[in-house]
Each structure stands twice: as structure tokens, then as C-alpha cells.
Image 1: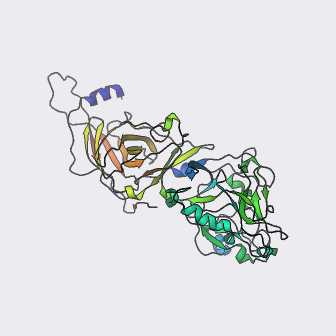
Image 2: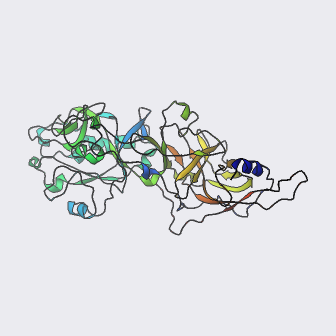
Image 3: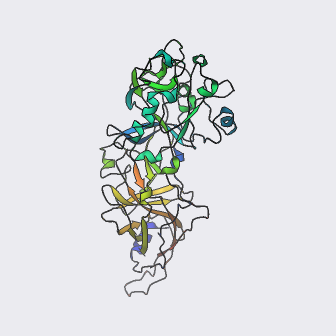
Length: 463
């Protein structure tokens, strides 16, 4: 089809279709919208030439700078059942390669409801593993008894001024094994493999040797594990003569026995991100670059015409997230009118303030995001926005459209949105209007819209 001719012809349309129902009315979580978060790939097993080869997600802040996290596992297996090893084996627990627990299992891999396992790329703090190095700790020290455990579960997580506010809502509870590398410390198997339910934790000795996380399978120097400082691991050490704990040296060496627990070392947490909280992922951009001026996702300026959207895949990518904000779910877009390929949308209950937008996505037949755009910067709770459909859509095409209210921040910081609702738009030929004597073409086009009802099983996902 001649798109240039179509555009000129459509511009001549003067009729409006006023619909008796609200095609953008608020609904529950539409079954047709699928987050693209699963497209972020896991690291190359064992690294590539002993170098880290994986992807990163920005999440939270450290000293006002967005934190970059390594994606270790984009589908961390769910925990179902009790707390002992046999239940874990029966229910598909994702075991790590490492020390056995005496029953044929492995005792140290964290699990969460198919979360996305992330690991800090830098040390976020410097702490003691435990404030005391008394010899009485030799036979009792384990992860849940350490001061570092309490710091991670309390002061790190509860602070509203640092790290993960307001992103706390997307951090999953994770069942984490307490691990002791040497049973001669006096701990039974049940004590050594006891589970704690953590928000934040630090990796264990065995996890730092897990090739599926992109690391190498030895304790020798490895670029895959390089950090900016020596850091603690959550496994107590393998030396009965000292009160020590396992650690990761800044040059990539994993020690099963090293520093006395009272020595301050770096803290590099891990956590499971809840994928059900993620609306979609997008390519991150450096702060201060031209791509982020005015707040936004990479290369996306305010425009009535949404731009092509593609999530980079493979490895070596950096992503930012748009998370579900329940407080935005009262947003309503309604009373849409049409003039050619131009759609006018009336909205209400939008959030106002810095970096607030009325935005749009157009999905393909596989529910993948094909176009994305910030239609308008919000200046009041109610108003109108204009959407111009891209010219590739022809008469008879059914177009899946999403209109939503989002806070779109800098290129490597978290964005927030109501849960998207999908609506089907059918492009049709319009009824011919009465001809003007000056009009010789006799051609006209119009659009009709049909509301796509969600399936019976559709539910809005909430954090």
C-alpha cells in the first residue's frame, strides 16, 4: 500500500466517532500483556575466557548513585515444601555444585518463587562479620547468628533514605541456607543446612564457585568475580583453629578460610527480584546523557507518535526497570475520539509532579512491545493526550494499544507505572462522507475500536 497516499487521504477525514462506552476504561490486569523481563538472559556459564559475561540491572541507590546488579539467574527456582533437604530435592531445588550435607544434597543455594537472582557489582558497605572473635564462637557461629545477618535484614533494608526505597516492594523473601564448611565445628547437618527467610543476603562460598552464575569453578584468580574490595561470603570458614569466615578477595580469589570475623570487610549483597512486580525492562542510559534529559528511557522523547521499541538481548547489556505502583491503578483513560489516524484520549486520576507522563505501548501479535512513547508530560490529574498510530498499520489490522501513567526517571533509575491494560483497535475503512465539489478523490478512511475483554482468569498482579 502507498503509505504516503494513505497519510494524505487520512488527513482529509473530518468525521469523529463517538463511542457509547469507555474503550480505555479501567480493568483488571489484562491477560494479553506480558512483561519482557524474561528476555534478560543469564550469564555465560563459567564466564567467557575467565571474564564475567552477563547482564546488569540498575536497582536502588548507594550514596545517591544507582546500584548496578549482576543477573545471576533469571529464573531462580521456586521453593515448595518443608525445610529439609529431602523436600528440597523432591520439589526441584536448584542445587549448587559444592560441599555435600551428608544426605546427597547441597546446602547453600538461595531459593525464591522463581525470582531473578541479583548480586551487587560493588561493595555497598564495610562491616564485621561478627563483632566478637571469642573462641566460644568456634562451635556456634553460623550465618543467622552473625551481626552481618542482622545488618542486612534490618538497617540495610529498613532505611528509607538509602539503598532500596521505594523499591523494597519488589524484593522477594528468599529462603537461604546457613552453611558451615567444616562439620567438626560441632554443628549437626540440620544446623548446617537450616533455612532463614531473608530479604538481602551475601553469597556463600559454594555460590561463588557456581559456573551457572557466570563464575569459574576454582578458587584461583578469576576476572569473573572481581570487585572493588575484598568482601565477606556468608559461609563460616573451614578452619577450626580460628574464628574466621569465607571471603572473596578483590582480585577474584575465593577463600574458605581467611579473615577473623571481627575484621571489617566489604558487603556485596544479593537478593531475589520479584518478576511479577516488573511492568517491563528497557535499555539503560548513562545519567546526564542526551538520552535522559527530561527523564526517560533511552532515546525516547515526548511525542504523539510512539517510537520503535526493542530490548537488546544477549550479554553485556544494562537494563532499567519500570515497576508496578499500586497507587496508580486508579488511572483511567476514556472518551477517545478519532480523526484520521489521530486518537484523542481523555484521562483522569493521573499522578502529577516531576517526570510524570501519559505513555503508550503498542504490542505485536505475540504481546511483545513493538512501540513505546511518552505522549505527554502530565500537568494536571485530568486532561487529554494525543496518540498517532504509526503508518505501518493498514485497514483491517488489529492493533493492541496500552495507555498508562508512569513516572519516567533518569536512564539508569527505576520508573513506576500502573499495571497496563490492553485494548484492541481495528483499523477500518470509513463510511464515505458527503463529497465536496472540490473533492475528486472520493477516498476516505476511518478507524473503529473494539474493547478486548480480559479472560476469566485475568488478575492484576500486585506487589
